[in-house]
Image (cartoon, rainbow, N blue to C red; front, side, top):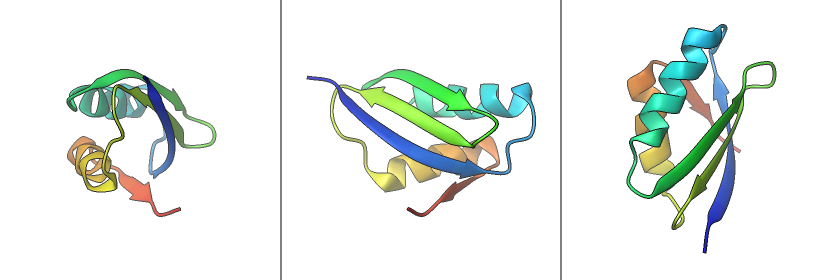
Length: 70
């Protein structure tokens, strides 16, 4: 069963930012889909199993942005 989680990423300003974040999160094991809303910084991730916040934070950090704590 798919799991959908929503995060907020700080620092994205352009389509390249969106591509970087999407690419890094998509590379996480089990991720099926990543949708990024540049205007709000919202990132919706659909995965096969729940992802740890640390895994998502690491991917966002690798892309050069900051995951905002909920």
